[in-house]
Image (tube, rainbow, N blue to C red; front, side, top):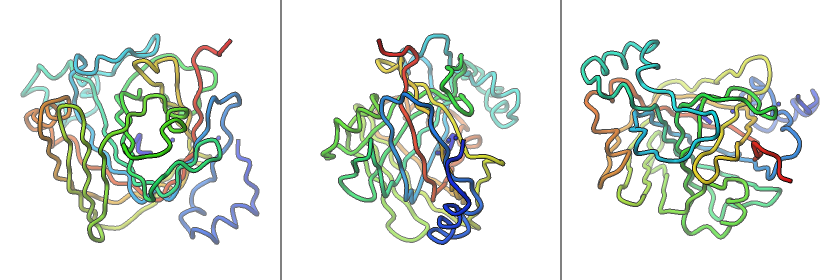
Length: 291
């Protein structure tokens, strides 16, 4: 995953096998590691043909979901200290300094397995998630960076596996969602929400390059919000491939994403980000252990 993911249990022999199966990309990235024990549910995603993300500013009043205890959203005014482009937008429109930083991502997933059972009724399966930059206390089971909180997630309304998906992602909503590739280096996406629809055409170009996660396997932890604010996910991952992308995004109706795209000059700060080829494993945990 973009933001935008373990002690290793893979031997050198397994790594060699991965190299034979998926080529130099896997060899350049460490295998996934172990998740903390005691997960409520564990899931695996692989054969990711696309992860397309668009950062944005959002009015915290529009994201009225309850945050985990001790967490707060990171505001644009804070982020602008290290981001000259964002600082320029805020100088021209200072009212947005109190807005939060969000990211909306679409995935094309070839394989999605929850607790050992495949849950992708079609392959590839479109998925979308909405995160916001946040800060708060770490739980002992968290791994990697904790920089985001989940505000929403969406899966196809015609899936036959709602119960399994909700077990690993209790924030899941089931809606009309599509992500397809009409031709090489071209993607179209659509997400239909109550009150507004998000659409985009995205083209990729240039050299594909591996995303390094450092000397060890990749980790990240993401708390949830709203009625699921007692939960967080831990991700371990490898294999991200980056490519330059240009996206034309639009919305119809009214809602938080329509408001975000209407902010003057916001497109000068937030570009379309494209990644592919990664594999991840995630576990769902509670901040307070179940009795």
